[in-house]
Image 1 (cartoon, helix red, strand yellow):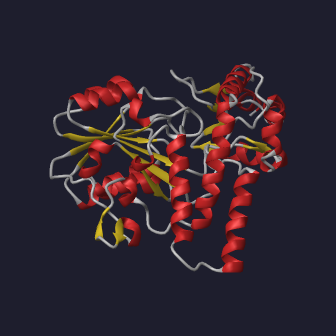
Image 2 (tube, rainbow, N blue to C red):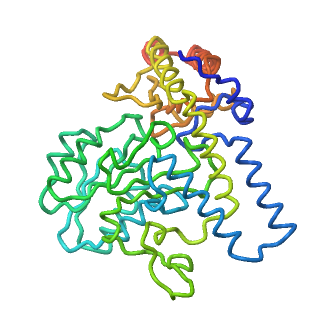
Image 3 (tube, rainbow, N blue to C red):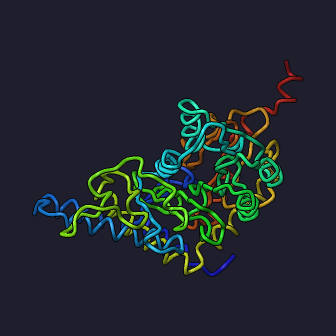
Length: 382
């Protein structure tokens, strides 16, 4: 393990001291600075009132700059949205597809991708093709009719990091654009959408980046911005000044309508705090702890780890003879917070976790399994 000071991080995250918090794949813990920023904004709005557009523009631009730093990007490439799904919808609704065009995705995608694609197929003659979440299967399925490859950077089910750079290169060679779902990667991995070869990169604020719900961002490669129309125009979609009304020349014109200003204050503070932890070695700490957990789980009877080619800090497993939703509920009752995805238990290891958290999860899991006969024993006793 590294010398990362996990104790100081835990002191800033009350939620991770209330329970064993392994659920950043759904909601990350909120740091004190984000809570303070949101309370300060609400107090200001309550006591002084919202009297001009400065109270609107300021939090928008602070959040945009913070997301840009988190993605190693320029702020002009960032649109502010309500979520990863919102960002994905912005791309799928904003691109001009024609009859017979194809969009390629995988069988492991989150409804944040599959839902918008299903709706597009409903109202158009665009063909949605689905393949295994394997590099050669995706690359080999790209055809001259493929206009978009829409896949996750990290799979929400298993935590596998897909080789998106090589997939993007294969897509570019055939003239297809690439949309990456970064919900399980941004904040858990160092992310640079430009280097990854993405054309669009969608992220959530409330997961690994430790921000409030209702926040997200869409990174857009500048060279493809003009291909996107603005699917949901609103007051701030256009630049309005003494020179008239005109489109913003940046991704700002794709901002989602009326993202909560309070939430924007919170995400800007959370992102800056998160970035400071990354500089101190946070992501390496989480990756090492996830490796420890995998090794320990492999020794637990009846546990079946999901083995992946490129693991992230998500650890997924099933248990012979046990219902994952039931185990999740029992673990939560014992103060250990994980999530099930189908019949997998998904453990999202964050940089706020420590060795005692791993020990608590393993201890409760062993206790629960000891209280339940293994499937073979149940069959023989019957």
